Length: 604
Image (cartoon, rainbow, N blue to C red; front, side, top):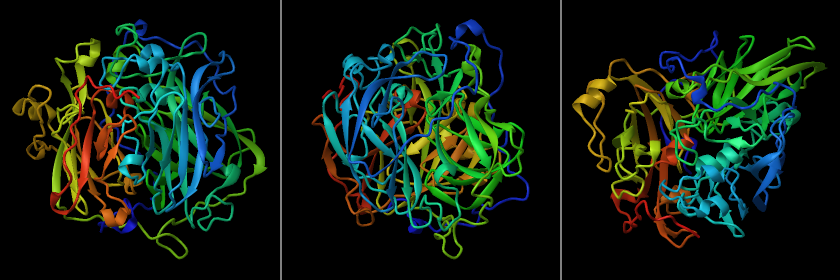
C-alpha cells in the first residue's frame, strides 16, 4: 500500500521531543517591503473573537454527500452570503471518520447552481469555460490517499449540476489526517475558497479517536479539527476574490491574499477550553499564503503528526510552519493556566512581497482560547507515539540509495499564448503546460529522489503535492538562483527545462524541521532553495489495482495516470500541474493517452 511503513529503509533522524522548543529558521522569510494601501481591497472592520469556533460535525462512513450552495454568515456583523458546502453544511463539509485499510464508497451529488465566485471565473485559463459560472464543475479528490486513478479526482474529469458520482476510496493502512476537496481544472481555487473543503480522518487500532485510545491522545470534546483560510469580504458580507484594482475582476491575478482569518467558517473565532491538554487537527486551505503558527504568550506546544500520520514522538516547538494543503496534528496544554486567562493562536509568517507591494498584510490573529475553571480530562503529553509496546511501528529509516534522480523546476514564465492580464505570467513545472506529452513516468516499485528547484523569479514559496503516494522529506539546500538562471536561460514556454542545480548549491544540506520527518504528501519549497524528497512508487500487487490503468473520465475522455502540482490553488489553476504515469516494471506501460490542448474544456 502506498505510504506503508515498510516501503522504505530510512536513516536515523526520527523526530523526538527536544529539551528546547524547536523554532523554524527565518532566513527564507519573505522580505518586508512598503506597500500602497489603495492597491488592495479591504474587508469591512470586524471585531475579533465575538463568534464561537464552530465544531465541524463528525460523520462515520457516509454513503451520500451533496455539494450545494447555501447562505453562510462568516461573522456576527456580516450578512449571510453565498457559499457552498458538503453534506448540508453552508461552508466546508463534515469530518468523515473511517478506518485504515477500508475502501469506503461515497456518492457525491452536484447540486451547485451559480458559483458563489462566478464573477471570478477566468475562461482564458486551461480547462475553464463560461459554463463554469452557472453550472460549476465538481471533481472530488481525497487528498493523501492511495486511490485507483479513476477514483483520484483527475482534474479534467468533472461532473455538473444534477449528476451523482460514486467514488470508491482506498484508505491508507494506518491512521492519517486526509482531506477531501474540489479539484476541478482551472477553478479549484474558487471552489476551495467558497467552501468545498473538509477533513477525512483515518483511524486505526492505536489512534482510535475514543477516550480510552492506547496512545492517551485527547479525544471527544478535547479533539478539534480546524480549517484555516485567509479571506476577503465585501461590505455586504459576500466573499471577495479580486483583491486588487490593478487587475480587472474576472482575470487570474497571480495570487489572492486576504485580510481576515477564517477558521471553520468563522472570522477570528474564540473557543472555551478546560484546563488540560487538547488535540487540534490543523488543515491549511489557503489559496496562497503560508502560516507560521505560535501561541501569543510564547509558550511552546507539541507537534504529534503530519500529512501521513503520527510521528515517532511529540516534537516540542515554539512555532510551526504550515504550507497550503499541509496538515499538522498538535497538542496544546492549558493545564497550568488560570481560569479566565486568554491566549491566542497567532500567525507570524510574512506574506509574499508582491502582495505587500499592493498593500496586503499578514494576518496575526487566528483563534482565541478562553480558559475556564474546569479541569480537563487529559493532563499528560505522551512520551512516544510509535515504536514502543502497544504502539504502531516506528517510522522507517531513510534510504541512502535510489533508482532514479529527478530534477523538477518550479517556475513563472511568459506564455505568449495566454495574453489575459497577469495570466501571461504562467506558473508552471519544468517549463511545460499541463497538456504536454513530455511528462514524468515513474516505475512501479522504484525509489526516486526528487530535487524540487524553486526557480521562481518572484521569490514565492510553493507547496508541492504528489498524488497517490506519501513521501519523506530529505532536506534543503540554498542555491544561487541568479547564476542558475543566467547560465541556463529558460527557453520559450513549452519546452522542458530542468537544469541540475548541483553546481549552484551554496550551503550544506539543511535537515527538515523535526515535524517534517514523518510521512508527507505536500512539502513547502521555500524561495531560493532546492528541496529534496524521496518517494517509493507502489506496485500493482501492493496496491491491489493497476496505477497505470486506462480509465474513462466522467466527460468520456480516455485518461491515464495521476497528477502532481503546486497546491497554491492560484498556481495549480494556471498550469502549475503535471501528469505522471506509474508504469509497470522496466518502464512498460500501456499506450500514451493524448491530451487535448488549452482549448479543450472537458464539459459534461
